[in-house]
Image (tube, rainbow, N blue to C red; front, side, top):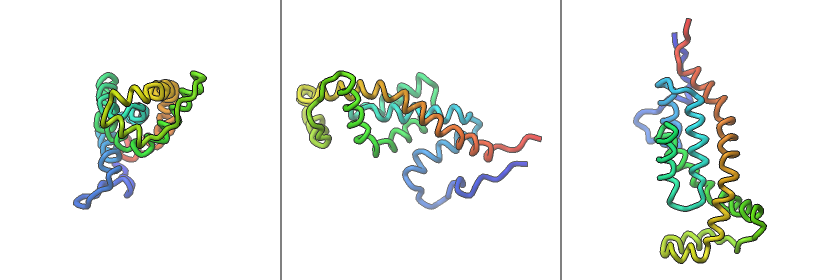
Amino acid sequence: MSSPASPSLAVPTGARRPFWRRWLLDPVLQQLKQGVSPEKVALALAVGSAVALFPILGTTTLLCVGVSICLGLNQAIVQGINALCFVIWVPCLIGQVRVGDALTGVRTQGLDVPAMIGVFRRQPAEFFHRFGTTALHAVLGWIVLAPLWALACYLVCLHPLRTISGRLRPNKN
């Protein structure tokens, strides 16, 4: 006998589902229903979110594809978390630059993220000339912070995923 899924986990049919549900929750639930371990799903969420916060604009989608292939992670989950992490990307970018500044002992120029993005989109060469040191500090900060972020995400996600997985799988008697 199987235990029914919680009503909040049921996938609504017909109605337009919120972005986060289509891109993250639905793929996670599908993987768990197919028997993928909660540990593997938590790893996809953790690694995907860490890679999604890589500080160079326009690189995270390809990086997520590469990491997913190398680690055998679910592409839909990794890309879904990549898309959702965009809302925290700018604050994390600022933190990464500051960590890079602290590690090098050199403070980079002020961060005007919209201006930096504008220059990057119009003239990538000019961006690297003007903001190259800032970008390197951000990458250095990401290298230090990403493993800590991934570990924290993995640990935070693991218990709820195990609980959900247990509700989705039939009881074995």
